[in-house]
Image 1 (spheres, rainbow, N blue to C red):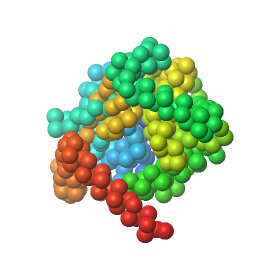
Image 2 (image 1 turned 135 degrees about the horizontal axis):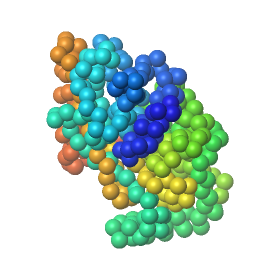
Image 3 (image 1 turned 45 degrees about the vertical axis):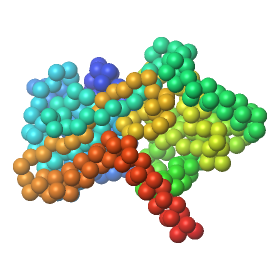
Length: 345
């Protein structure tokens, strides 16, 4: 694990907790699908390739569908044959949707997408100065709503890096409600994901930790977020809030509070992850780049995978890139979510 850590810390491109050895090891404790290929150049370890092996030789990133950074952790300027790598791993295909930039696995057909970040390297005050210049209306209205929330519901309190399970379970309950309300699949219906989050919260080291923070009005929890961090990067993962406080924009209040505490704790970047969300556009200072695509060998399994996955992926990318189509799809999902909620009741 020390070599993995050394390689990760040698390149800023790998400074993401989803690429940390602790994350892969924790998922591996819960899923037999997880494997790690160790790459050698003579006696020297030059890289680690964590992946999941699914039926028919289909390879996916560790905790596929959950993570916002994927790929190898390796020495600088590593040259490998990507198809040879997946062959040696016993895979017909390796598919990815958040591959970090500069990866040997990134082919010419990979599609690139922005991953918004909050840059805190110059401190929280410089960040708020940036917001005033670039999202002034959002920043001022969030402060005003914060004051209004405090007047109407009680003194605001923000607790950062909480380690108890009770507030985490409150947050996951909000997130489940959000998934159902918006027509999305409830990730926390899978027990292994719940247990993964709980184990990550219990992992607290200098180089890797689960980070839970909550905002309270009086004694009532209003909003929160759970993510994971390295020494200097916090990955945004599961934000949620109590819908009873929706008119106060509690998510924005929580993100600003989190940014302030994170900066004070040594966090330099909050990676909010790929995906078009209004709050990300309002809070971001810049963007990283991630890629979506696949590496495949000539095989029947790869052909079946292409027919099942690639056309769907391209259609989804088309929808995500078109604001009108995205708005229509989001509206349809929310309608489905309301219908499903009524049926369940």
